[in-house]
Image: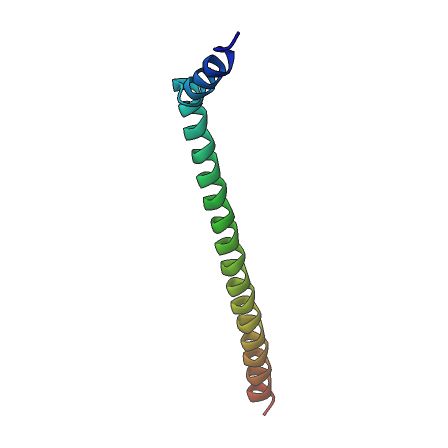
Amino acid sequence: MNRAGDILAAWDAQIGSSPAEAAARRRDDDLSRLEQGLKASRARYHELQDHLDAAATGIAALAAENDALRREIADS
């Protein structure tokens, strides 16, 4: 009974370094890394979408101005 604490401590130390625990830790690290990558990719997507929206707005404004100038030239 006196060795129970030592045995449990050794058991806990062994469990902490088991192959299953190492595999679970690697899996968790991989998941964390993938989640961070996904978050970064989504942020980049939103940034690019904002640029695309701005470009589309600018192109639409220029096209409308171009049409107005063409009509003005045609009317004169």
